[in-house]
Image (cartoon, rainbow, N blue to C red; front, top):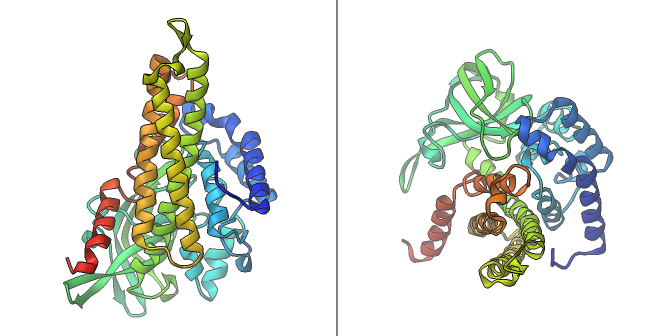
Length: 386
């Protein structure tokens, strides 16, 4: 990682690297092979992350978190990206929109997540409404002081069955200059509420062992204290999470690309054909060079963006650029690494094939590359009224 870091950030990086070498890397192959993280292993990672001061490092000290700024969190997330999401997700980073909890909600939802007593699930995507949030069919209607929730969500992911879900639902329609627009509200819904069914969803070939969940709501009664933030401001809340979430995806992509580059470089230096290391052939060496250049550019883009975030100046387009460029850079790096390894790049004996599979998801979740391009395009045209 060729980025200027403070002394404290270097110490943080050393802590994370040491933790991963001891607690995560040894379990990669087993988790990928079994397609699950054994619960006892997950809890062990969780407990040792708490002891190392890494759990909830993204949340402010005022609520018991680690209080890291965005630049420091980028260092952490980049290192986590070198291994499976199924493993590093056990080092909890509760979603920052839980900071919108007020009053009794803090003790019921926010603080237990900081203390690793509860896990949340971010439930926005629906079977017929992925990136098109305004097509959301999940809805909640008033019934006196309560709300009645109906609908379904999928592709909500987490390391373990959650204790509650942050569920986004339409609670009405507002008239806007661009026509009628659904009013979206965030609700805190406990697993076990009557009418709320949750189960593991489809298994993904990327990040085996990291679960997706299907959620179904049938006349789930929610009290007024289960609205997160304010009624109708759900999109604003989700935007706060999605923006930095996309930057963290970019950071993890850089970490994974660095690991792939290291594996490919070692192979290119040791594997000999026609009497010399294959890295000396331009067809191979240029792939290493291209990956190194793109990784450097991606790292600089991430750090530029987190510096803007720390100053409160990051835009949606900034986050979209990070997500787009870093995820697609990783895709190219992974493909180059497989090609350099030749047939062995697809064999289960080596980690390259696993990293290649994991890399593919990064261009899809947290908003596809196409959605990121749409956000960027919109930001370019907006000043012209187009």
